[in-house]
Length: 131
Image (cartoon, rainbow, N blue to C red; front, side):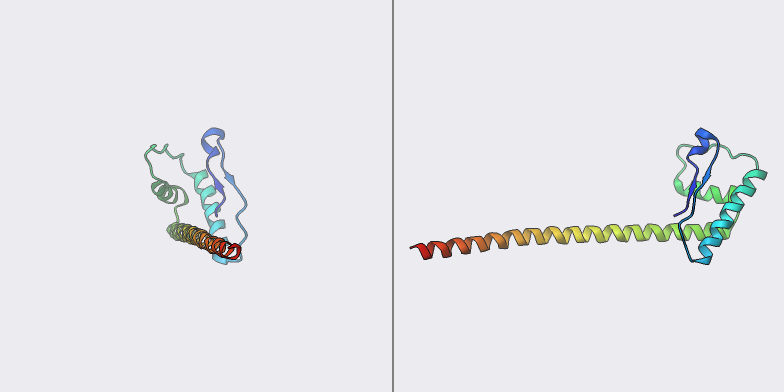
């Protein structure tokens, strides 16, 4: 997860670079440092960007950030691959959770019916013993 908070830019006029999650991966750490340095350096020397349209997609915003502010294709590719990997992991997690829930629901239904069958057999046995 990357800790660049741009939400306060419009309202308060600044951005926040928050602490990056811990990592032992040299590439991840190096790219985060390169991203932050390029973002600050290019933001200081370039004119302010125009406001984006309300209809601009998150994909377009991502591309525009790297094209006009960061200006580093290798970083863009690294973060695009990283984003895609995280999204794939999230989809897999959601599918696994759905499968577990479905399996759990099926087991509950199965358990409920066998429990009902067991109680029917027990009732029959009790009736036979009392007669």
